[in-house]
Image 1 (cartoon, one colour):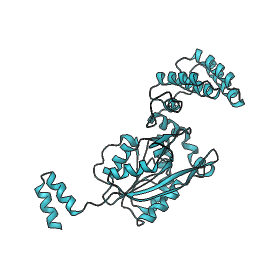
Image 2 (cartoon, one colour):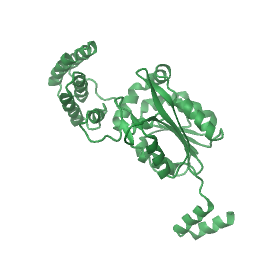
Image 3 (cartoon, one colour):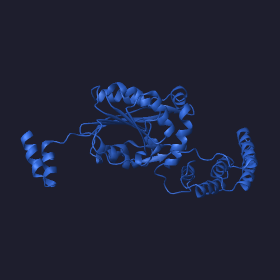
Image 4 (cartoon, one colour):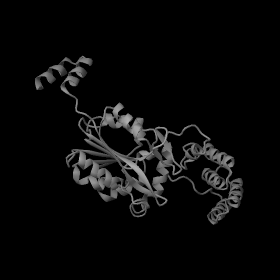
Length: 330
């Protein structure tokens, strides 16, 4: 995806926007918003500018003005690469936002890619991959025939699981993240795709699907879990992390613009998709603004159908040959 226009195309408007950013940084949000509004008079169709104005007005305490600015950004660019929808949701000015705009997630990580590893590991004490690896090894033998790493990013989870499989595939929405993952030589196959819009799996089923710090960018996980349930080999494992939401509701969009999920919601989705829950543990998965972020480390298993289920499925399809073959092998 092309990086969206953070410049207005008008040099004078850009200079005023830069001065406005300096004023905001110095603590004068009111003056910053006034100057940013002047910038937008010169470039009224600048979506990024309207988004920035919304942030300045929010800091200045003008909620209604911020909401109007974010709505203007959405009107200009409905793909929402800046996350105005999330800001409106947090301000209570939009219906429940159940997932992040894909263009926002792609833009965020395309811009973040080059500093991603150092920022997460060195500054945020990112621990999800190591916690997931330990949970997987506690639940299963070391080796897997095929692993699919959802939201693989630059390959931090893949690096830990490479030695556990002969085939490692990665999927991510960010082209820049995939470029860096490719440069590490970890994955046998990489795919640029939206996890919420993955095609139905046809053959080549993995026996492990991982998702480290991915689902906090989705919110509603019904589509993703249903896809994993049909893609995963019978007897295969599904291992993932989420930020832990302990309040009311199934999931919550936090001020960090990430989602947190309740344990009850996760367990309900897993069981409704036919998974057996192997383990659920709570731990600190990273820091945010110096504060620990608690998450759930989850391992589930897709059961192997019993002989009775195989017979029943074949009979439901009217597959006499399948019934006969099953009978001969059992």
